Image (tube, rainbow, N blue to C red):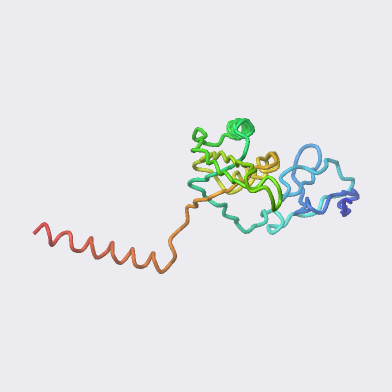
Length: 206
């Protein structure tokens, strides 16, 4: 359901979705005036009003100030996958490499680790015939893909797409290494240590 809101400006009715509502102000052009929405950054409609245009104030001409949202800076993203079928794991690794190439992500070649084999020897029947036994084996093949220097939004898009296409019977573990600023207390300690070191250097040269 789309919610619309109507505005009547100079005998012209504009039906604008709520998500695109911004400051409506006239732009002087020839032969008439065009009405635009500053926040949406594009013209909603174009018309020539029959009456005199509304005066433009300084507050309406200024764009809205929105709070800046800082994205995460990821230095390294490690995607570790484990599966029981080597062919399925290799196919999924090619799919992730192709996704990185299309998104322009700096990715290292996929590394396949040493597989592990776990064997269990159990009775063939439930509680009798102790000499008749059967052996079960579980094979696990690991794979690691490392991505470097990407933002949080790009990482979220990549992980959402690849996890939706993850085959059945495969486990995935993601490790994210972020770049963050030091806390304020740590910054003060580093600044004092740097000032102390700079003050001691001239005395050492003497």
